[in-house]
Image (cartoon, rainbow, N blue to C red; front, side):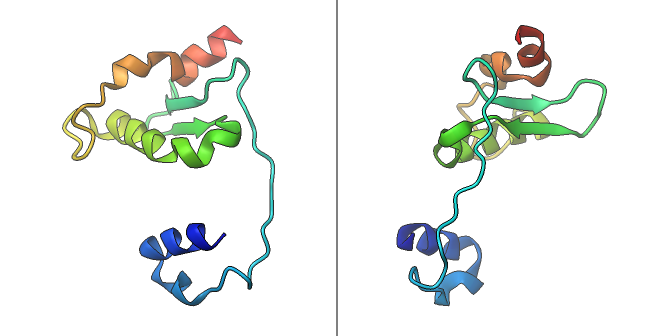
Length: 102
């Protein structure tokens, strides 16, 4: 908890004063997508709508990579920080593909 709060405080400075003893750890649902792969990318027929779901317990670890994929889909290949990321290589994660395979 302390490490998570410390990292979170770098993004949300108001959390800097919160002690790991103060909040209680809570666990919620960790939804997964059938087949074990998350669903990441634009939703066909809904311009501007992106899905990033179904990570199950790997969401914390995969969050940064998921964000880069969504940025790449939303803003195109010129996204700063995603220079080596080819969104086409992750086509199996696109909502249309994942729904078609379930």
